[in-house]
Amino acid sequence: MLLIQVEIWLYPKEFMDTADPGYDYGVFSLDTNIGDSLGYFGWTTSATAGQTVQVLGYPDDKPQFELWLDGGQLESVGDLMRL
Figure 1 (tube, rainbow, N blue to C red):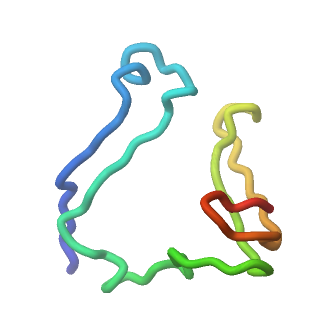
Figure 2: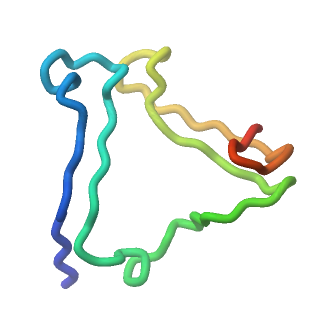
């Protein structure tokens, strides 16, 4: 069995105080590299123009708790990626 601990958990105080969706995010750090044991779901830190990508999440402008998926081919790759 793989036991994983969260070392650092960061989130905006504004969300905890007001539940404002504009602050609905968090970041955490684990004590081990779980990708080495569990895989990376095909994720990569490198991308190339023409590569097909997908984005999954809960957009603020959609009904609450509604999960959305979108994707397409990258037109270009730079500091920002554009579909």
